[in-house]
Length: 122
Image (cartoon, rainbow, N blue to C red; front, side, top):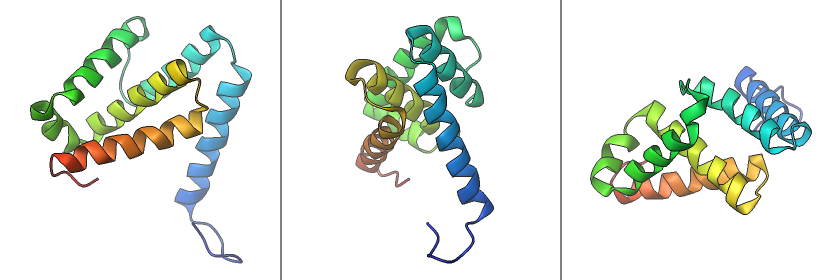
């Protein structure tokens, strides 16, 4: 976060832009199909290409993450951690009707804590 009166960094501006875009997408696409489309776009950014098997893919990702032996390896992989976060967030959006921003934040907290349990501090 920038101090009052200072110009935000390019990264901060980019983060804000993504937050706004995603919040708007999920607000406007407030149907099951619309939310799935918005989520598919986010998933594509993580390299998850086959939207028809996304639920099965996320289920497998979360199942692997629940296994402590597999979790350690996952926690040291940049792309895998983000996939776990996105799948966890999507589960929170669907099961708890949590807003996107809150779901992402809660997912990060949860994933960081579980990674810390296996010695990976992210």
